[in-house]
Image (cartoon, rainbow, N blue to C red; front, side):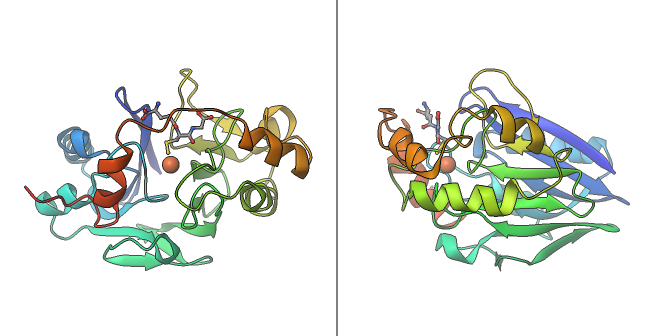
Length: 228
Ligand SMILES: N[C@@H](CCC(=O)N[C@@H](CSS)C(=O)NCC(=O)O)C(=O)O
Ligand SMILES: [Fe+2]
């Protein structure tokens, strides 16, 4: 299987390309980097079949809408629970296939209601969006955020994966690229605490809202297609 991790310096977002037999998926593309993503896919002889979003992002506009303009056969994907528009609305347990491989959708609400984690068929990798970040997790102070829900989601749907499963987050703000389930179960600064302590930590993060939130959320509810 072909795998690439790509990075947006502006929003610190990771985009992932997975492909098999010339068919591929992109997870969490960023609008400003659509040209880069198309070029990478072309150079690696990958026909992009599905353009996946782990959730309705608040900090950047998804590239899935613009990618569809240049790749008309590609289908945008987001969870039904996100309330956003896309060609394919997925639910917990659904599979997205490319070549002879697939990822399974695991609903991991809490950062937003519609957050999902994509788990590769052999459980070697999972793509956690903002549910699990390296040594951290997505904030829960906007967009239906619910710390108790996030704690339960992660413990039930991510920490139940094998310790060796690589964790690929949607963002990292300190230059880290990936982790493993085992590492996060041991060293995550928030999710290793008790449920009550976790809820308290999340209520007191004191983070400023993402700069782009007022533009990004409405745009992402319509797959990144804004009035132009
Ligand atoms: N400064 C950035 C936004 C940073 C931020 O709020 N990140 C989110 C993920 S994007 S919704 C988050 O959940 N962070 C958790 C954390 O502990 O940092 C901007 O202005 O865009
Ligand atoms: Fe987010």
